[in-house]
Image (cartoon, rainbow over all chains, first blue to last red; front, top):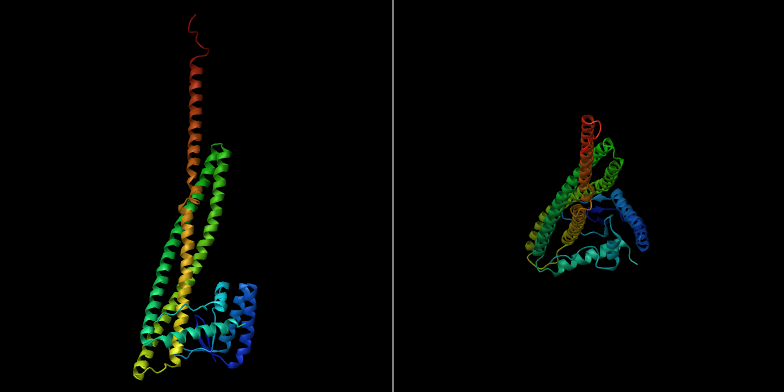
Length: 96
Length: 243
């Protein structure tokens, strides 16, 4: 599957990574519920490391397909994470 | 409850497909997005330039405060030499207050520097991404016109749309951070301008005045003693004005 690390780029990673990513994602969610920004960032960082360690980066200057999974930036603030779950998401409204 | 990544993925995909479906001519949309990103990136660059200027001003203020420390130290020595411990104490108290402020200022300037370095690095990366996006969109546009019909543009368009959205967010965040830094540097600058920091250094002058007063008092005392001495020498006993 293709994973995008936001602000960094896309990686091709084995499908088997999905469970581990989901585990870290759940911890990130718990941290958000507890309002613990350090734990939130640590869980996201964990996902980043999983992807970097197991994936192959896709070239940034070539056309690539859309991602299956998008991992938020690891310096996500609580407000941004909140927006991600309840509001419009992180991506600003695209022009057009 | 959806996790963060599934939510982030779903929202991004929804936005990208909305954008591409809505557009009559994806080429125009991509061009517009590119212009928009370029414009935002310019804002980030200008913001960074402002932060650099503000930081330089703060460093200048820092240098002035450091000079005040040296001056007050000298004044304390002069005061002790002139025999006024009270005045020396005042000078040393002010020196210590300025040293504390200097420590705070130093930490803040360093923090500003670290943030600035980070932002410069990410701004350069973003510049490269926007440039890559520029050539990718040309490929998509060529593909689109070659197809000559309103065919659904393929996976590659989803890919570039996603990248565009990500770069857009990254630039937006860089811009927000730059604005925060500008605000912080501006607030520190204002604090100094309003005299909250300067007051302490400005008062060094009244120590100067008191030192001058001390030394002139010493001089007067000396002259007085001299005159008394002269009078005493020239006249052993007071003259009777009338006998």
